[in-house]
Image 1 (cartoon, rainbow, N blue to C red):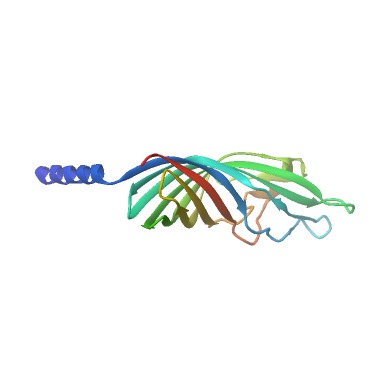
Image 2 (image 1 turned 30 degrees about the vertical axis):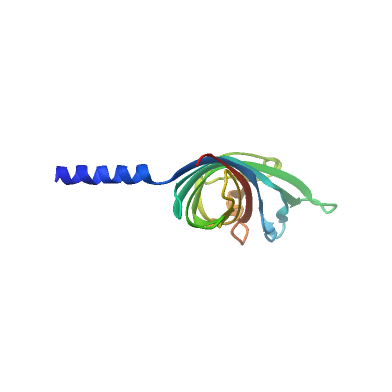
Length: 207
């Protein structure tokens, strides 16, 4: 049995050593695709409207690893910085616009195949919450309860055959948009799941 285990280990190491491996860096931007509908916060006598005023472009940078060529596995680790402007209908004159910034570490694990200069890929992505700074903290009764880790998925393509290539991806998420928001101890979230478009440029350092 020990000899068999050693033989399997040697075969695995040999296959891994012969497999095509690539490593590189990436950077780009992303944006949410759709503003959710407004919420009504509180009871009828003391309620106010709360919604998304503007979804800003966010930035990202990170590293990617690819094992295989025709069919490949591509894990990545990407730092994302995002901003959303919320509107709070606290006055009759006009809504108050308040910004929220947050950072995540995204970990996509993509599987795909190569077709000429195009690589098609898709798979799950984990979002690890890092930090946030929100002007909503000035609103009476507001508190944030960010989940430390959430899951989503990505699908898209990479165009390019040399050291430089470009990504375009669609990302969906399994959590509701704004599910970190609480007012007076009650949790609120918008009706839809967040989805975003991601554009990035890649450079292969090892190819």
